[in-house]
Length: 136
Image 1 (tube, rainbow, N blue to C red):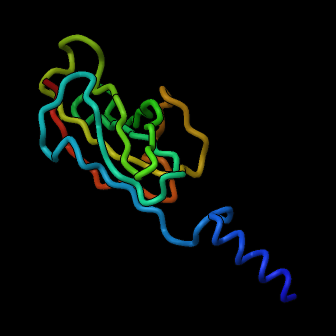
Image 2 (cartoon, rainbow, N blue to C red):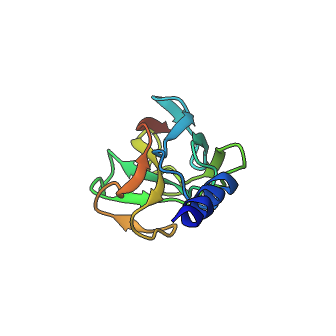
């Protein structure tokens, strides 16, 4: 029994066993109520640099305002910061001036790929603050 405890402690010290701490994710840019281009870079932080982070866009003023659009996976850096280049609305001027909500999720419970269209925000170990943006 003592040997098993020693092995578990060693794995914890070496970072080979996931931490029991709750993962937190946050969007730091753009600011809430910002005006953004069609392809803005969203930036944020996650408390576990091993986490996978995805940004999801939800249109509020388009014909498909019941959809949640999964964007390309963010690149999480060693310090837990992440950038993600996303798409806000359709190309061209059709969605200019329309509002969208952005949320980042860390370690989603279902597998995600960019271009997935969901019926709701995805369940995940952590969900960020929601940021409202208007498309330039």
